[in-house]
Length: 318
Image (cartoon, rainbow, N blue to C red; front, side, top):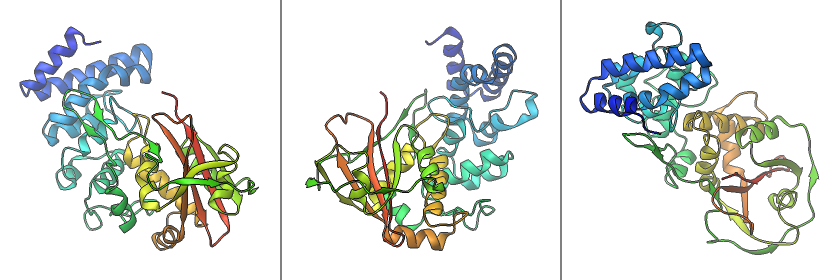
């Protein structure tokens, strides 16, 4: 519901009165947190924060995350409207403009990875990532980026344009085939747990065998319409799955996916050489189901080197 206060604050943005709008954001957030707790504080102030992150000069917009306004006045990684406020800000300015202005480390890291997803190479521009995730897109990530937008396109007055989660998006390249018997389950793997965290509405399982062996664990029995696809085609969908909640953002999805791949490669943390080798040998399989509508994912990731295959499959509630 658009209130008089919201209209007035939008007018402040139209007039470029950013300092007043920042003050209103801080007062609103702190008062709502004091009365109702952090979740309500985030929700009450987020529409004003979006206006600032989208339209204000970076020197002022970055102050959304500065605690100099007092307790409960600063946005953090979880503050969001249509998307995280840090992601809105990161889509509006280059890393070179933002880097000197951002102090809080969690926000700084997420902004940096958002700029990477938008195509910037920050290898020489930013401190190394604490987990070792590279600050430049790997070749397979860059190829996947061409398959569809990784970061939402935010709108000035609020809201965002997002590419929906749908894999496979069409029946093109798929054909009817008979699935084999389900593969032998391999429980308790870290990679399975991390993949389940990436896609919490999906069923995840790991088997000894091939991608179709893993698919048989969750797909309807018998014949399906399916086929193999390159990992570059699955990559943008996995990023979107990992950042579907408005508080997460695409950078969180990228970091989560690198953790999944590291675990599949048997590494404790993302090691680029090992992940490059894993991605080069991964075989991906996808299929359609009759009940698929708007948001769904049916994918297996098979590593021939270990003989393991993971299936992640489900439909998100509309």
